Figure: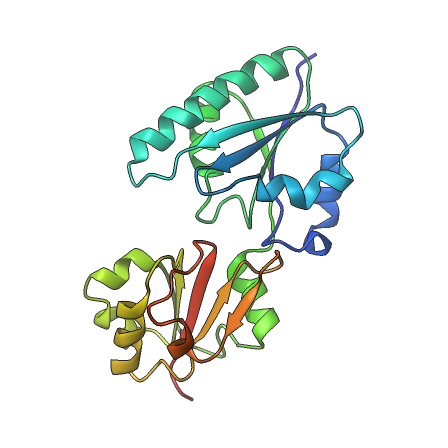
Length: 233
């Protein structure tokens, strides 16, 4: 009998924000695959779920490179997908854990594509994204009534983001890392700096919430960070 593959979103960091379905699914696993990036000394996703796993589950750590080249991501995903094909062919229930939600800026999307190419069905378990978790933590409303939202990678801060700032009531910049002074300056010119909030490593050690963006000008911020910017009401 074939095993089953599960893609499991584990939320932004706080284990108590795991869904009931995620907790139940984790206990069904024979093998857990957890991604590790070059910037991580350990798997953050694994640390969130490790206390919920069966004692006899096999844990496989697989490295995914931090690269802007989709081909490099696809190559890593293909290798893991082939490993999963063999495992479920041997009757193993296999899970892959990912931070946040599996279908939102996630390594899992590349893996899912490779699994589909191999004819492997996946059961995807949603997780709480860092965006909604950050809004709840800070008390910042993401949207009200007919307001419009944009969610963009912070890399766009190096291009002309003014049309985005003009068109949307709330803009969330994901994957803010390094020196974000340029982004702060653009928000300031748009009149959105005073209402913006910076959130880093939400639910993890060294969590940081900053309401005055001047405090992080010139700082080398962690890559697990975002900025929520709203127009004044």
